Every structure is written in structure tokens, then in C-alpha cells.
Picture 1 (spheres, rainbow over the protein chains, first blue to last red):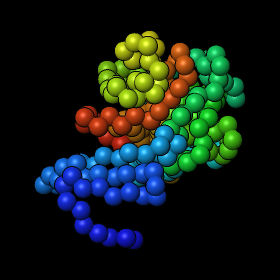
Picture 2: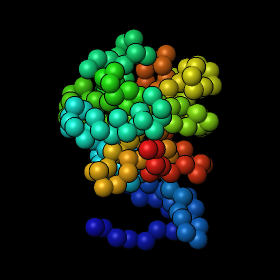
Picture 3: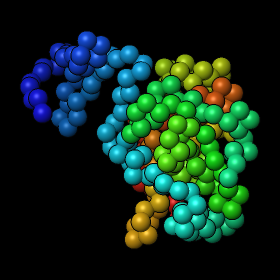
Picture 4: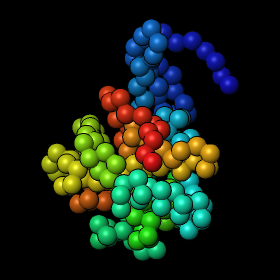
Length: 77
Length: 136
């Protein structure tokens, strides 16, 4: 992993088309701005991981049907 | 399995993709009546990429969506997005493995303009919604 330091207001580029700017440095968070072409997906890593973890290979699998049944029961359907 | 009831044209277009599945932009909602209200967001190109989702209104009738100006443009909303009107809001379910309870990602719902069928997973950054809310 490449590691380097940037100050507030400075930026760096990834390739020629993605620019990442450090907008604000707070106590526990940094605010970041990204300029990138639309076809480049910019995602929060944890959301990507959560989505991947949600994948069910086969919606007809017994565990999926069991979960759906539990859901229907909880919703009184 | 057949396409979900409220999908006259079927294919949902995610112009910015869906986080975690780079390069997949077109999905359909498959439904099986016995499993409703759980439906399955399934990649057109890779049917094994299949995520259980449901309308947020089934579990959180008071859920509020926030869609910023750029996302409104991307989704081509002609007027304010309204659940039950021009917008559909789906939450991604994590069914767990039996040991853990199933959860819903309320922080990052998939918002669909039902007039254009353009969709995006829109982080509700200013909310206190959880990525793993217990649903049942």
C-alpha cells in the first residue's frame, strides 16, 4: 500500500482521470471529494462488502425459503 | 419465478453500478409469490449475483429517503422523489447463516425511479439508520 501525507485542501490523482481532494480534516473524520468519470464507481468499502455478503446463489435454496417464511411470519403475512 | 408486479419494463439500470459488483449495471427483480415480500435483485449478465431485497415500506412504513440534487439528476426524477409515488425504495437483506439473525441495510437503500427505471444505492449519510437493522 502506498502511504503518504496530505494537508487540508491538497489532492492527489489516481491515473489521469480520478482526483481525490482532502477537503476538511476533523477530529475523527476527514471529508474527501472525488472527481472521477461516471463509469468509475466510487463506493464506501463497507457497503460493497455488505452487498457481496448478501448474495444468495440460488433464491430457491432451503435457507432462503426459510428466511422468507420467517419474514412473512414476522410481518403477519 | 417471474418479474415483480410493479416492473412493466423489467430491467433496472444502475448507471453508476452497484457497490461490490463492478461492471454490472442491469438488474431485474425476480419474485416468487411464496417468498413475498422478499424479492431478488438479480444481475442480467450474471444470474448468480442475486440479492434478497424488499420494499422498505414493508418493514419501516415511516422510512424517509433523502436524495441529493446530483442523484435526482442521475435518477431523472422530474419531481421530488416520493415513496409510494414515483420512487421505490428497496433495502438489501443479509439473511445470515442461521446462527445470526437476518438484517436489512437501512443506511444504503436502493432507490428506483419507477418512471425511468434508473436505480442507485443511495447512502442516507445524514441519517442514523443502521447497515444491519434486525428485521425478523
